[in-house]
Length: 272
View (cartoon, helix red, strand yellow):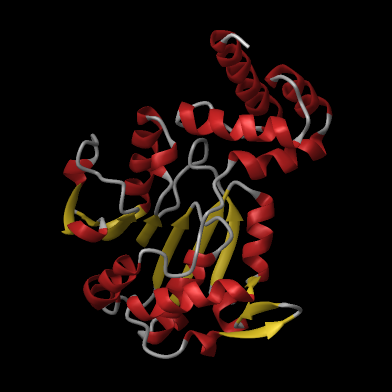
């Protein structure tokens, strides 16, 4: 098919999704969203994007499944251990000065990062005074996150990450085997509120002490990146902390002046 026709079809599909379901993928990085849509065409046995669009408009249950392809669900516990080690060594001493804490994990996917932070906060004696908000646009991912149950074989990697991240105990202390999987401790779940939130269309979470939004911006075009960074900045309290993914930076953003680089290698910033 002619590439220009396919590009038009892609634009119409994303418009249709926004107008019908209020999910806005129109400013996602084009190469990334195109790749995901092409994978979805094969899965749904649609010859063209136009055919997929027609089915999306007429079959709401198909759209729920399509979301799995359009949203990124790559996550693991204590991913990029240097980030968690830097939080533990540099940010936690600041957090200990507050009587209560609010933390936002933006784009939480299936919940691994939120639980990782909960474990770290527990080990630092902070979990009982912390409320963790973990948000995503994918309802299926949020359901998985709320269950807090992951395949047992994934815990080999999780355990190694936990050790490199400066874990104080054994990761096995925080989960138990059940139904062919591993279920995280209820005490961790109690500290986390999982909720639907779109960085593309929704508004600010106010007065957070730490916002962790990692490996999300890389999937957005420049304009949406700036919108999101403004949203994250406005969600932080005075001297609050922002954590980004290791391939992301504030350096070329219009919001850079609002922050100081606290741990440059770990992409941890503090609001001025």
